[in-house]
Structures are given as C-alpha cells and as structure tokens.
Length: 343
Image 1 (spheres, rainbow, N blue to C red):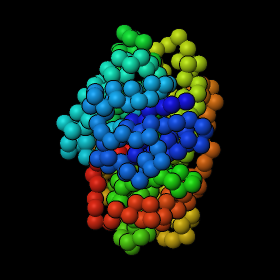
Image 2: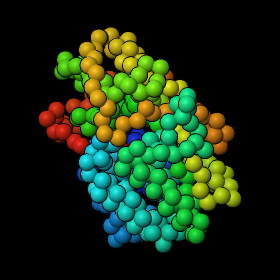
Image 3: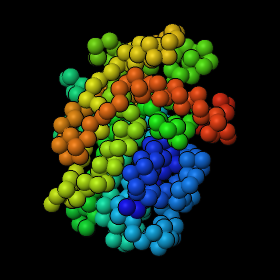
Image 4: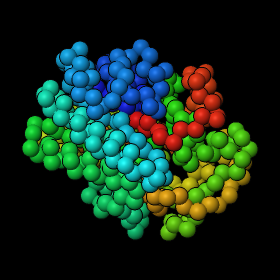
C-alpha cells in the first residue's frame, strides 16, 4: 500500500516509515527538513517542501496516484517554545494543516491518520485518562492539536474525509534497527536530558516537584516509538473497520502505566548503570502534572497493545544516542534546535 507520511523525516514519522517498509508498504515522505533529517529519507520516496504548498502536494499525488492513506505527523511540538512563539505554532500546526487537507480532498484521498497528543487532557484525580476524558490543553502546542481535531471533525462531517486521531503519550526509544531515532542534539524531554547528564556530567534538572502526584514530580506514560509505529500500521490496515459508519474516531496510544519523572530517573540509573545528580527546578511554561492512558479502546479497535518495556525504551535510547553521530554527522552538541520535527 502507498502511504503519504508528512513529517516523515522526523523522529516518529521516520520510524513509522521504517515499520511500513518492513510490513511491505511504500511510504512517500513529505518533509520541509526544518528539523527533519535528510538522512532519514535515504532509499525512500521523498519530497522536500511544505505541506501547505498545493503544487507540491498535487505533484505527489500525480506521481503516486495509488496513495491509500495519509499519516499526518508534520508539526512543531516543543511546549515551552509554543508559549514563547504561539503565532508560529498556530500557523504551522493549524493553518497549514487546513491547506493540506483541502488538497487531499481534491484528490479523493479520504483516509487521514492524524498525529495528536495526550497533552490535551485535563488532569484527573488518579491521572488516568481515556478517549472520553475532559480536555484542558495547557499550552499553545496542545491547543493546536485540539483545534486541528475539531477542524478535521467538521470537515469530515461535511465531506468524504474520514479521520482517525491517534493521541500519543510520551515517545521514547528508537527504531530497533537503528535506522532512525531522535534527531535533535539537545532534546527537551526528560529521558534525553538524563542521557545528556550522563554524557556531560551536568546535573539533571527535574522541572516541577510540586505536582499532586505520589512523589511530586510529573507523571507520564512512556511508550516506545516502535510500538507507536506498529499502532500506525494497525490503524492503516484496520482504518475502514475502525471508523465504520463514523467520519471520525479518537484512540489513545500509551502503555497504560504511569511513571513519575523521579521513577524514570531511578529506572534510568538502573539501566545505564550510572548515578545521576538531580537538582530540582521550577515548572517550565506550559507544564502540567501529566497523565497515563487506559488502553481498552486501542486493544479493541486496533488489536494493539504496547509491547516494549520502559527499560527497553531507555536501553534503545542509549543505543541510539551512542550511534547517532555515525548516522547524523551534521549534528553537534552546540547546534541547539528549539523546534523539533516530532514526527
């Protein structure tokens, strides 16, 4: 099956493309390379450009008229950065998606898998959520995901477009074959910062220790990126049955287990075999206590459950960071990226 993957040169998008190839599908990559990496597109059909460029998107469909589904991963994703630069985030994540979807409809491509986020959920009393839980996006980034979901719902109700929104929790790990992984040299998430602490000897800043969790640190659902990729394959292959007569559905993708940041630190030290100096710091702009997902819907609709453990995700992340200089030689520690092609 031919699949168009936007943001397919980023962390998650490139891993989805790898899994698609392994499963016998052909991913066609569309990425601006603002933060995605050209190395992740080698040997794959690739178009460099913007999702809001209608001539380019038309060209892709002219070249690959048998595209059966679109996995829309392209986005800006760094929460504190979205607080500082909301206009950029609303333009990139919302306005450009609207332009992109219009071209999809023109070409009669009606299966859209949208990469959404668990950051849109309100904090619950036990920090667990499901697809019906209340929404309370705490940052411009999270609000862009809610807005796009609502826009796509309206479009799906008025056209033949059908949308499956997959709400990711906290991706870790890499492609097990080390083809792709986190491309940023200065990650903003906790696991990346822990690895940097080991490499540099600098303390790990634990941002936020006053949350109403069991130990005061934020709680997360750390899901292996390869598990996320397999969920996308399940979504592609089961798309019509998953939607049924509906025009839109939502599914959470996580492990079903909540891990606090302090617990992540302890597990990381165990896997890495090294102690990490931890210093407490205030919450970052847009930070929330977090959540983990109940997994019933993903099991029922996609026949998917996460298979990789937290320990495996940490180990694979360590392997990737050790190998990354050989795969992405253009990266260096002083090249700080504030905008992360998440996907």
